[in-house]
Amino acid sequence: MRCPAVDLSECVDCDGCLEVCPEVFRRSDAGYIEVADLEDYPQACVDEAIMMCPAHCISWEETETAP
Ligand code: SF4
Image (tube, rainbow, N blue to C red):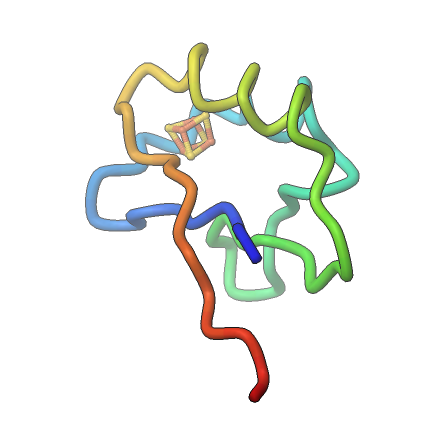
């Protein structure tokens, strides 16, 4: 399965991903961008966030599938 990941060391806190894909990206209580824990991620919306992120710090990651 693919899951979006955010490199927080590069994130510039522009809130762009929160605007284009709020069902996936949100701000944690600590103030950082985090990815919601979903069964399935909406590809179009995550791809849009990846394209518009000014820091290019969002990417798809392959996650281990349970055996
Ligand atoms: S769009 Fe990119 S730089 Fe902006 S808040 Fe989201 S992850 Fe951070």
